Length: 462
Image (cartoon, rainbow, N blue to C red; front, side, top):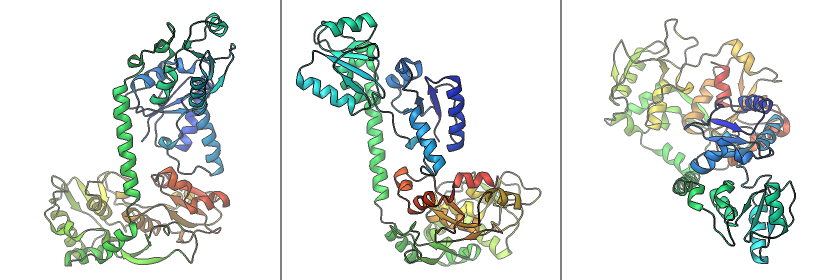
């Protein structure tokens, strides 16, 4: 979740921004103040003296973890979103604001090599460079405190800084305050150590690099090999009985490159028990996953199914008792018991927790899914037909979502995405690069097919 704030916007612009963000990112809060939780600062770089705002100065000097995004980028993204070109884009994937966005840099008395270097660094980072000065210049870069341009800059109140300001700003990833780089004499250097917390910047860059390497490693995993290993894994007796609760369902083949292909010839299906995503050893070993958590078995299960649930829960150190922390009811129920409270979950919650090896009882995936006709009508409002396709889901999410969609009375699930598809549900947790190259989303934008994220799907049935 991103926590967003803004700076250098007028009241009307800020009001428009909050409406736009609420539409595109309904689960990411916008706050007036910059706090320790803030992860994004939206800056109106077209506004005069935007870099002097207190929020920007604090961010650039002390908070390398805050993503700087221009107001113009948000507006452009919103227009693309309205056209269906930016479906599923997360706020943290918005393009970072260029270092010298809309900044006009004048240069004076720099040798040819230095002049060329400064020009390249500024222009490749969103700014413009001129070898003259005017009242619209934002800053003068020079090594010599003399000459006509220097005099005019002083007269017009334009900051005069050393070239170090350009170098350090690019290194920081954002335009630093000019105060620490005022030219005080010929070839004077800036007060680099006072410009920002470089130790934080280095630590943040290393963390980002580590994260990118981890994500790259994850993407490089061969999902086909993982799925094949999963299917040939030895299944013991307990796991076979657990299958009797789940039943057999159809899920898409997870081979790399085929999952989201829209072509009927290329898209394959196979019969795979939802329970097969569980490692048999997780059921049999003395796992401590549910230690300290108690469960009551609710409605919708046969006696034999309850017996299996007890084995699954107790094998992970959970307790079975009447006055329990959670009540487990069947995911196949068409209605929630009248006396049900907020602690009601389904067996799918247990499966998700075992699959991810962490408790997951609070998400919508784990709660009873009981769609009403009114919910369905709202979901399909404006949709010419109720043929639904999904994209971007794998493993336990894929099988559970297909099971939920099967409960929609007027919905027809289709594994093949075509012009006759009325609704496409996508996984908005995927990286932007994957969403932008997702074949179904690309065709949905072309065909003007309605697309919603999984978060919006859950919202429709709250």
